[in-house]
Length: 390
Image (cartoon, rainbow, N blue to C red; front, side, top):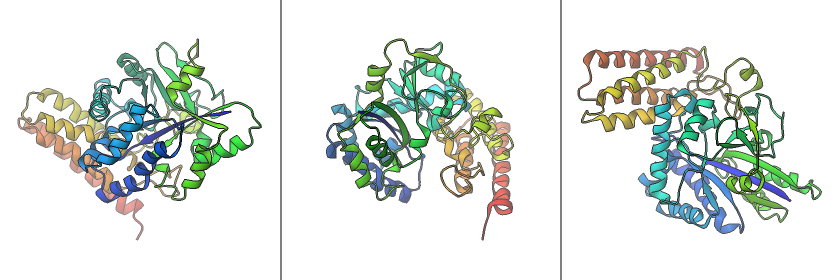
């Protein structure tokens, strides 16, 4: 029997382009929701990010939300916690990590009810640090899922079929198989099952949910072949941990990393290269600007527009704005990652946050405006001089 622990991460950035949002919802999210009616005995663990849920509510996707609620209530879908607007948590102070987690938890409880509780947690981009794990442990989460490179900084260097425990904490950890996860997973799982010769296997995969339908248009037959194979049993993460990791799991100390880290990057102490590349001036200035806004807003909690300013800041911390500035070649696509409009949207959210505070010190206002303008000049200088192709 092949036990398939299949984790899906569903996410759309805050204020996503409306056309793109509806396109992805139609192509992927409705199709994933149909899985539970279509395939008997299917079990999935999913993170439906707070940012996505917020927009599903805004656009009145009531039927889709009800389908997800039903799958959750039936126990077919396990729901993991995460961070509301998908920030790279190790790059944030602890107070902001907790805030993003609580925002995500609040909207999940609003939609899925009090049955939703702190069990598993999905770190955006599987970006791990011990500091982040300690916050999760303090908040009572029971398990996380990481990429296999996080085990030691090397790929394929350990037993990926086991459940582990983070040293010094009460959190279990499982590691996804990167090679299988980076393929069209159902097709590869079916291939492995057909060649297993009756041997028992545990395979852990984790992918973006948009893999189904949006990125792979011809997914139906290959997905059906895997989901209906009698030699493949789908397990939720918590069920896998209960069956295979309850008694004295091996303790590990995962390395600071993310699910696209390379061995060379980790050897050179660059764990978050898509969001925090040492030589990337735009990323550095965006992060410094965010730190500035976090610090300044902390002094204006009684301001009449504080809640508005805080919401703008929360959205500004999304990983997408830093990712769009990376200028790196994607590990998934052929193109270089660069989108000045997305970078600019994050920069604008930061300055709008400061502008929203009614009683903000004028000197601090001007510092925020100067930071904003400096980043704007950098964005468009980089774009026209380096990345633009007519």
